[in-house]
Length: 310
Ligand SMILES: [Zn+2]
Image (cartoon, rainbow, N blue to C red; front, side, top):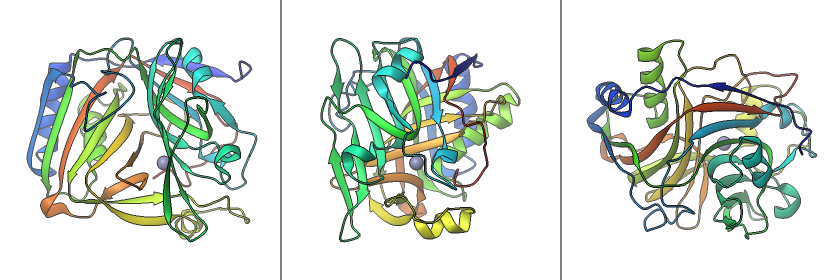
């Protein structure tokens, strides 16, 4: 694993209060009601989050590991990563990692979506879930055990020391635009900060409404070469609230071949990759994000493409 190539860049880190003001103004273009404030992070180990560490603070950083080119056009089954190793590679061996990626197919038995929630280091704890398509074509949620901290193909992760502290609270209700929550946040940051990349990581909750999500079935027997192929291969669902999503975004790709938005989440017994809510009139979101200081790019594919990045 240590032979994986890695590069990193510092991200632009404006004051939290400034980002809150920028995001609040931007979100009001897309939602009837919206507020973005700087607050003390709620204890994320408590309900309704039940995650591995209390907060999103202390050396916050993002990493984009692998990528869709390892899934398509042709699957590369040997692309397996361990979050514990990835934490070391982002120079934070004792960290709280949240993220969206693909589950360890050799353990699950098939390809799957991963909702990563891992505390690495001496107090290792794994609260991650996977969502797969089972033999009856249904979505099946599965909790991973503490000793199964691997993922496959790709992972967009946010790592921090997991401490409490000041974070952004995003609240939005009744969508009036045609863009999903994460794209609203990302686009607003790009509009304001231009070429300076600003990165966020954290969680959002779908409090009311429902969301269109996909779950990857097992690997395609034929190469997937365009978005049409991908959309026919994926299984799409309309999942009801409440759901918790692990979420990362970066306003602009500073030439690192990044996936600029990626969010995976789960509800009671279902989960998957977030596309958008399907209930604009009664949707409600609550999110907590922190600004990332660095972006790491690990095991960047040599041959890249833009298929399947939505
Ligand atoms: Zn995904």
